[in-house]
Amino acid sequence: MTCTKEQIRKLMRYRKTCSLEVAASKAGMSENTARQYFKRGGELLVNKERDYRTRRDPFVAVWDQLQEMLSRDEGLEAKTLMQWLMENYPGQFRQTQLRTLQRRVCQWRVMHGSGKEIFFPQTIQPGIQSQSDYTWCNELNITIAGEPFEHMLFHFMLPYSRWETASIAFTESFQSLTEGYAAAVKELGGVAPEHRTDNLAAAVPVGQHKSFQKRWKDFLGHFSVKPTSNNPYQSNENGSVEKSNDLLKRALDQRLRLRGSRDFASRTAYEEFIQSVVYRRNKERKLRLAEELRLLKELPRRDWSAPQEIFVSVRPWSTVSILRSLYSVPSRLVGAKLRALVYADKVELYFGKNLVQEMKRVKPGELAINYRHLIGHLLRKPGAFKNYQYRDELFPTAVFRKAFDQLEAAGHGDKEYLKILHTAAMEGEQLVETALTLLFELNYLPTEERVKELLVTKQTVPDVAVNMPALSIYDGLLGCSLEGASR
Image (cartoon, rainbow, N blue to C red; front, top):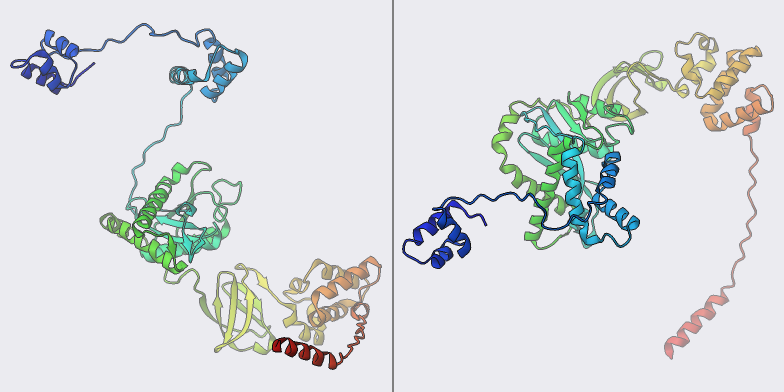
């Protein structure tokens, strides 16, 4: 037994006035150990390493085989090797020897195994990066009005100050990602120039490393933030928020235990509970947060979800130009001044307070010409179609283009195609496209007359005979019910 210096000092002090047995007891050591220390004058005893085994090595006969197997594949575990030994050497080995084998395998890995991955601790700089992640919270066993509430949290944090915020989410969707990020930076009051996520599909295309979804880049571009992600299956590269996930859920669990109930009257009440826990945790981070706030970039003046307002005039050719994209509008608006609200995916046009048109937003430089806005005027001026600057936009599908090419080859000119396009505007584009496809199969020239013939369908209204019931039946039913009530 090896004792501490304090124990030895007590032994030597009490031995001056007490017997060896009493002094050893007061020093907290056995009498034999005390005798050895006393003989050596209080010097520390040095344990000598044994150069011999206290029991026979049960694996000495098979160890060369096991080493060869480990050399071929270091991934083999001691438990697997023990099962192999018990199968190939029946009766010679038993499961109780597993711990001994595990020590031998561990020793072999240290002495002869290959190098392991090294992790390099990083110095986190303030105001450089923010991180976000999703974490499931079903283990908290939350219920809303008695019903189980399965959910996850979108967790945002700054690695340097550890400032965080969390919001309820149900899927790792682009909408929940953008809404969570926008709400977090709005509460924070600034943005870090870089934001890191893991490889969730809303941010990183599946199977593509270090590439980002265009809409995610566009979203972060609105905040002038650069997107980054950790390498696949390397969660340690997003380690700050990964660890913070566990700490936040542990804090929520502890507060739920203090609360004495995991049931909430509504989702709003549960959200308020989460924010109260996050607020308490953030109170301890004010000093380091102040350092980061001085370095963060300002938020853009306009929210991501807020539309951009632009005032435009409708040109004589019934189009408006919005953010370098051209859109057609009904001809009645020519010359009018309109207010355009440009959203991420759509454009709304207002004349005063009245919504006059809503259309899908296209990329800068692209066209959105709707033939329905122009076809009536082109029928009156068919000659304008030949050299119309945006003529290619007046072929809604490849079927219409094929119809035009056949009419052009047959010498029927542009007017016949414009009539077909007018029919599509009046009767329905899909119906006309189906009629054109049928005419191609029949090897007929797709003229307006033939298209209209196919569109005419005879609808027969079936004769429905309704037999009037005899009212005396109801009188009989009423009489039966009255008779039963009187009884």
